[in-house]
Length: 392
Ligand SMILES: *Cc1c(COP(=O)(O)O)cnc(C)c1O
Image 1: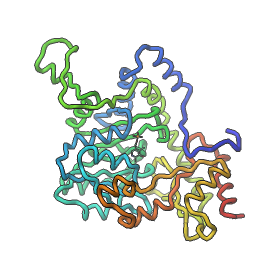
Image 2 (image 1 turned 135 degrees about the vertical axis):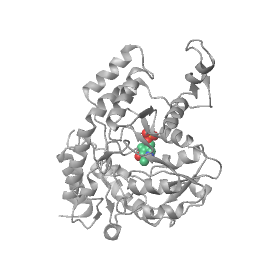
Image 3 (image 1 turned 30 degrees about the vertical axis):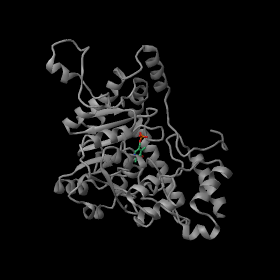
Image 4 (image 1 turned 90 degrees about the vertical axis):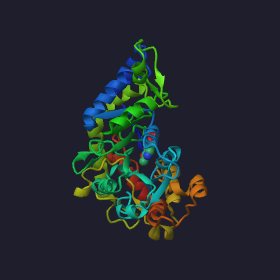
């Protein structure tokens, strides 16, 4: 990358072996769901120590089917944090439940555990924690609440492939987890996602619903004829991952830990380089033992508006300057999903409802962070900040 080329906030690392695998897949005559998807699912089960790993077109599809598998009745509620991608909320609505939004902890940006119980009602059926930026939610607390109130836990682990909680990989224990393989995520299949679950019934349901609701076993129970016949047990979806996508995945997964180690190194360096700047409120310390299992999907400082606004710099001004004057892409994760038009109108959410999420979402941004990023690239980001803030 030339010094002044556009520096994106994220970029996938695709090896020559992965590219060759896609070419081989294309030449093999079998490009949709087949042996490469099977192989990727076997690899995911082994890596995540999960009895089931079901690949899908996207993590959103995984959230949708996992929630549908909860079989909600009208009026049922799902608890979800205020800082997340809108897909978390959308899929709750699509599955026929009501998203009950809970404020975040302003330090971790994860759901505020202390607020969950206050939001549990007789209609609550599930909690959807989100491992924001790749930092695990306090799952002991979540699962003990879930046990006490008999709730499902559908973990939105879209940002958390490789994340550990108390030394255990997310996906290797608990109820159900959904991972994303979108190009910005820590590993990619172009688009793609995966559900891990320890619920045999849910695994069967997803396996059937991701392909038109077709259940070959159901038909075989009534028929001794060959496999050309099948039964459809519900109006299902078309969410199956392609072998073309899995071809990338089977080369990405073995590189995940290396990718995440590089992300952590870059996060540590950001932390070092930005410590003591009055313009920033930094995210959790990458050197602190509490962040040992962090997958560093994102590096998300908050702009200290009390300082920067005096210089006329809001978060949006800062992002524009980085892009237009310095050719550096900065991500925004996220504008508060509860303030989108649909959610404001349907549920009456307004600014002020979730104090910490309001505060964080007005200030947060995602700095460039990806395994191929060099220290030189990172120095360029810091240099651009110095110019924008008028620092020496
Ligand atoms: C990326 C992401 C999703 C959606 O993932 P897709 O694979 O793009 O569908 C859902 N939730 C969170 C928190 C995400 O970061």
